[in-house]
Image (cartoon, rainbow over all chains, first blue to last red; front, side):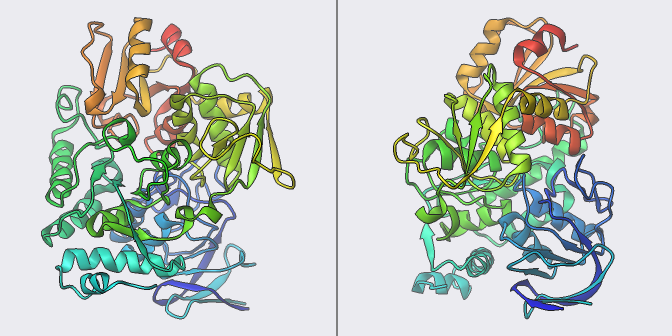
Amino acid sequence: MKIYGRAIFGGCVEGEAVVTDEPITFLGGVDPRTGIVVERGHELEGVEIKGKVLVFPKGKGSTVGTYVLYQMRKNGTAPLAMINTEVDLMVVTGAIISEIPMVILKEFPDVRTGERVIINGDEGWVEWE
Amino acid sequence: MYLTGEEERILDGEMGTGAQKAMEILVALGDIQDAERLIDVSSVQVSGVSYKTIGDAGLEFLEDWARMDVRTRVFSTLNPAGMDMEIGRRLGCPEGFIEKQMRIIDAYKKMGVRASCTCTPYLAGNRPLPGAHIAWAESSSVIYANSVLGARSNRESGVSALASALVGRTPYCGLHLDENREITFVVDVDVGLNCKRDYAALGYYVGRRYDGIPVFRNIRPLEDEMKIMGAALATGPISMFYVEGVTPGSGNADVDTRGLEKVKFTDDELKEACEGLNTCSDEPDVICLGCPHLSPAEIREVVRLNPKKEVWLFTARENKIPVRNKNIKIISDTCMVVSPLKEMGIGSVGVNSAKAAFYCSNLSGLDVRFDSVKGLLESGGR
């Protein structure tokens, strides 16, 4: 399956998907030292997003999340790539300044956690088995 | 996106690399959001100030930008930092932290951002009028400006807000446009809300489960109640709300809610929200009020209660007042969320703000008692 969306930040990478249909706050929701989701009660609580293709609808919460993504990139704990379905300025700006490949799709993709996904942030497409 | 001649020149670097970098960010964000063009903004509120939240990476990012010799082109104010500039040391803020924090503030000052250090700019000299286009970060101030003041702002990130400050413009899209400011769902409140804690719980419950623009019915909140409710809504993805008969543009007669999703908020949901935010059954180490920063009226209200326990009141520097009661500490420039409370020897806090409860627990790992001011003062504190 290959779906075209909107290219947000460039780079073509392949990695393992981590998928949630809940929005994510990076400030307070993710520990930038470890890349693990720490928000209590979140579907991904305890899950490592470091080096993964993170699939979620959009950001929520603090507008400082952009800097948390930037810290994660510097610490080597950032996601490999991100796929969203809505524009959230916190996440999108985070992808741009942290140089994380990102695509926004019109509909939530039918990808499951653990599946291999290819994402092309220059041409704006996502592909999986 | 269409750019004027002047905007093109900024993008080409004719006004320096700092302004060019800002314009590159705005153009990228404008294109992503299908904005036709940029519009002038009357003010900017910048987030990403506390060393606790942005770390060394954020500090370097800002110092690099400030070195490019760039200045704000519009009135711009700053979110809270990690400490009170006057009494931070006395309250136990670590030296290393203070040094890094001051470097962050200096970088912002160098770029021309006013070091107001409050999350309630609208209570401290940056209060936009209805219809004003603004580019604000700080989710609680964005939702307040859109909903209570009738101004227009997208929920900017700390970085996109700074870019707008340095260019004086923002992409014309999202909540700047009438068609994106319509009600998308209804919240019928079917329980009496007796204190600000209850309004915060209402906001938290709705923000955790829903997205869009709600209209609340059957409540009559005052400004300060909408301040704490909006902050809680914005811990989720919501950036604007209406209260029927209270907020601008929500006259009883005009709102057609047929066909919209209806959410009920009863005693059950109120209890559920409150219980979900409580992680502490013991007495908290300190009571912390002021998320968002307290208004002058709210400070006087606590002073009148004459607390017998230690209470920290967070507010804007402009709104500090002298008090005799030694149990009350009035602290500006920071708050319980963005100051390093754990490193200052505090393990648990009592709060009436759902936003504070959410971040103190998830971000800072503190135990949280979520209760009304009266409830906290009667049993909490050290």
